Image (tube, rainbow, N blue to C red; front, top):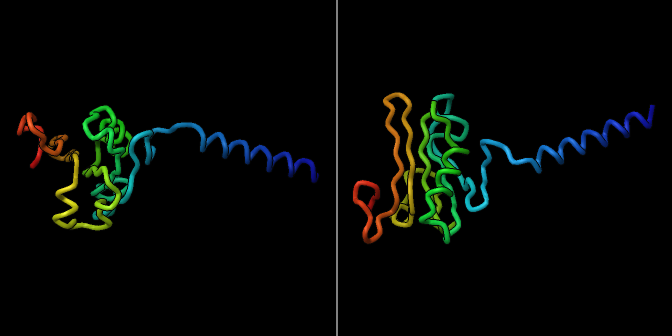
Length: 137
């Protein structure tokens, strides 16, 4: 009986290690980004993490749209309200809303989705040469 218990415990440990090691959809971190915090909203309409998701990205990837798309795909479902705000420096990531002017000035991109009216969009922090319709000041 004791051997069966140890065997079962070993199988549970192996299963846990495999679950942790296996990449999963709806992760809270990617290779160049991670969910650094959330704020606002509760209930099913606001999704798993609340209305605002704060994401810290690798500073070398602030213009890498594929990295943002990966974070969006993992943190937002198309049927939920979702706003993701991105920073490249941890010290500026807010812990609550409203954020300070300094925090807002260091935001590098944002994404929003409103399933009720179908509105969604992605905006960069404006840099010289950007289309003003795809960025914010």
